[in-house]
Image (cartoon, rainbow, N blue to C red; front, top):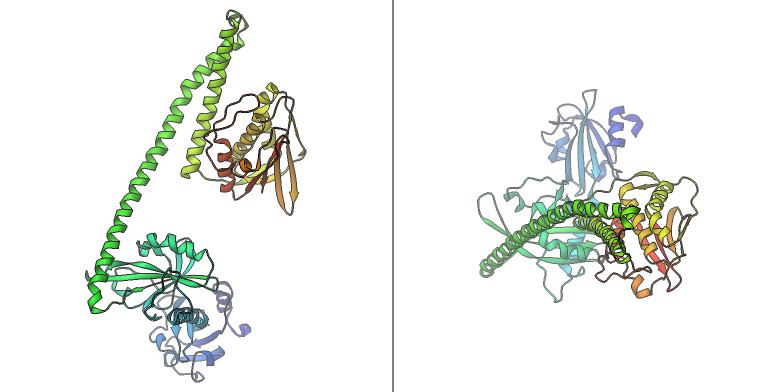
Length: 499
């Protein structure tokens, strides 16, 4: 069939349309008179289209649509003479002809109708703690949204009459942010996501809420989250109430709207508090660094001045060394607090680039070299050649520094630390191993849980912040990598990153 079509029409079919079934292509002139057709007309027309007849005689939705105002023009899910549904594309060509392309959409519409029918009959049961009689669903009375992403859905089928009363403009097949369309769904969404994640056929009913129409009146609405055969849907419609219950339903909806407004205010207040927290940590971290660095610099200068240090007795020399150690720990804590705050609040962006893992390991080794010398710890790595990985170099170096620091802390004098790199099943495995004291299973299971209020002392009495491994987990998760630990008491530990 494609060999009989103009090149630009073939290109449109191949490049612009999704994989199609039930394709019918009708060629018309600029008045909409049929000049020929390709494909099976029986899917859409009750009789064979005749040359010279108007296309709208066979598909009334096309009345005055040829020539189209724009090309291509798309009409979504139009019901044909044979009761099948089709997306209709109207495309012009260089030869002053117009091509009307029918694409079968019956299965998609029938799937929604099948879901609604099953809900009506009770076969697609509601996920509630009590039985309830669902009012009959009408495919034309519900706004049907097929969920395709986070808060994003595609409108399926025709827009219901009640929706046209609202001051909102969307078209059939549009992608929409449903929580912007109906802000109340922010409240229901948490329950809906939990329900969808169960991957069980069924439906979950929301509470009711009101929307204001163009003329100022109120509509009482509710929604159903539906899961059916691996597909997720939101069905939104008017609440059907008897005359006696109409006022009650309206009042309930108003109460829920008021509760939602209160929730919105609480959320805004929480965001403000989080902003204050973020600014506070940033200011403290920045302003604390300068005086700490100044004290540290003076302590190091005195300790490195043999003439001055000789004037101090042993006690004062120990005190000076303690000042230096505590200032170093305070700087380390300050840096980790800043990183932790940013990670917790999401104020960072992972920028992945190709980085040489060998160089990252060498940098981490140099950073930890002084601490390893103090405990006479041997270091080795099996990686001798360049090995490139897609990571954020700054964040990933922070991971390696934290793991090295943790290994040094819990490795006794004359111990060893190694970083081994292996490739298995297409994944790069980076293992930071130590010959330290190890840990019991109950500790290793919760090692990445975050801030440890009672951080353990190291083998040399080193104090920790309780933040290091929590930061590691946050950064690894942000890369979509995995990290886990293998450890036994008195046999050391291995922290393994899977990329």
